[in-house]
Image (cartoon, rainbow, N blue to C red; front, side):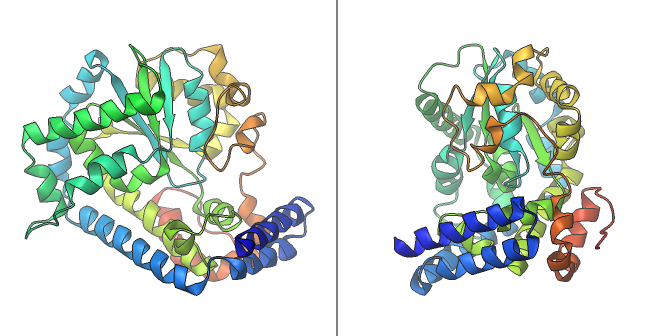
Length: 347
């Protein structure tokens, strides 16, 4: 539609101004771009979709306790992953946290095959699981009391569709499901796949906000959630806050965190730690994700960025926009502190 093309043009202008160092003009261009987003009638639908999704996610996380998660992912399940077929892991994190970069490196390993940003789990497991409502119970109790035969059904459903999505048999390779949207659905994921390794990418919340706000997101419920600087700050804080509270309840063996800032500073070292967590030795191909990304279709919006050699130019990019982030710090501060990033410094 014409309004969408105009919107994208303003976003692109903002990116050019950012590269030229005209940060005030870039920020204004990204704000202007949103004036040409979908018509108001579309936003009513997107808002309703966003509210439905996030209300259910909040309900899921509020109903959890440490006992649920300890039962769902005991250590012996994780140890048994090496013998399961197919082997499975999930790579997730807030959008724009570096998941695509790490995914391309891992997919280059001979023992790993990645499945990038599908809706298989959301559409074919999570939604059907709750399609009849909660019927007087909580999301966590619905998961906790799930009969094993039902859990096996959802496993078969997902694994069968994953083979179709890959277009090949994984064989003895580990299947890596890379999907930022799984971050908020991890409790359900771990209930269905307690043996799966979980890799979570983290990045400075201020950089996440700038990166999300500067992107031309399709006019969907995600774009609604990041429609203004204030809304974007609330969404970044919500998504990272959910992970902050979840990881305090998860057993240590159930997940491995990777910080974007450390990954780009020591790519070989940090990638090696992830491979060790997944049960693999390093391979030289994993150190050149930009080479591997040119040999396959990358569906992520960051497809162009991952075709460049690993760099640290995007670290602390938020400082260029500190003037506009200052009013948002009250919202972002819990996520910044909760995930162990430096205290806010506004210039």
